[in-house]
Length: 120
Length: 231
Image 1 (spheres, helix red, strand yellow):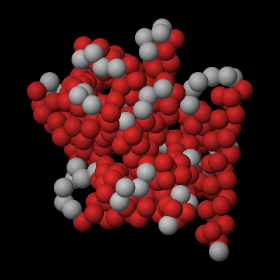
Image 2 (cartoon, rainbow over the protein chains, first blue to last red):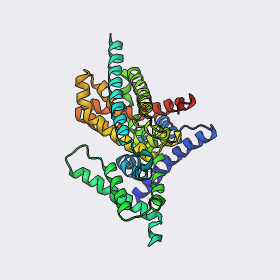
Image 3 (cartoon, each protein chain N blue to C red):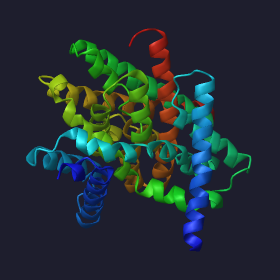
Image 4 (cartoon, chains in turn yellow, cyan):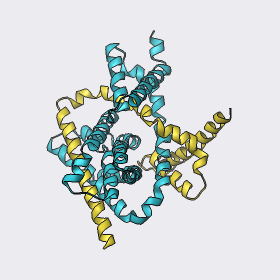
């Protein structure tokens, strides 16, 4: 019973912050995803200690731990788009892989360069 | 029969059933690149196709589950907050690296896609491919991509990045553990972070730290792309 109440309380805190993010985006008439604004709000609230990690520990670990489960329906929707991808499968895979390589090299090299230049 | 299939409980039940099966297999197989999400979505697609159940029936329940993506994105702040102390020594180097890396991701996909003369909808779906899935989904929706394709390319990105990381670091002589971690988190999100933790705890922590920052940076780059009317 105590755990149930904890889950409900923590979920309400997270939902409130999420809705605050969505409301902000709506009021600013921005296309920025409200969920990402909510994430920044939670980050700020944690820093200002308005919200403590202990206030959301259980639900955040459940959501983060079972995260893949919640993406499945969005992933299944790919079955409705195959006609558009027809004939482009290999291009899509190749572009994804080459771009991943380039990003890894550029990021790794630049971070290493910036760290070195600061130490000198 | 049809009232069962069009009930939200069908989509929700099937997703959790197959999803938990995927997570269970993940704990049983030694193959670290087994992706429970990819397994589950392909399994469900197979079930729907074989039993000739329309996607729209599954979607009734699936849409309820997708509503949880918002709160999940919000709690991505928790790992970021827990590791933020590690940022302070090299904050500028890390932030600059992620800014450059996420710009590279968007620009390279855009460039290669134009080269391959992909349709604009396909390009929009591929642009957010290097960010963590929940942010990738909302970014794809924001610019009008196909969410399903975005997810598939996110999984390919993460898996491929995790496979090639050690070779890339060797060939391009990247030796600093912080640089390795940030490179993995920026290019290959959570799947890359799993690989980063195999390289070392320092690599893993910095990779995890990079995921949410990469997400925010990518959203900003995409908005700039929209503003400049590239997409």
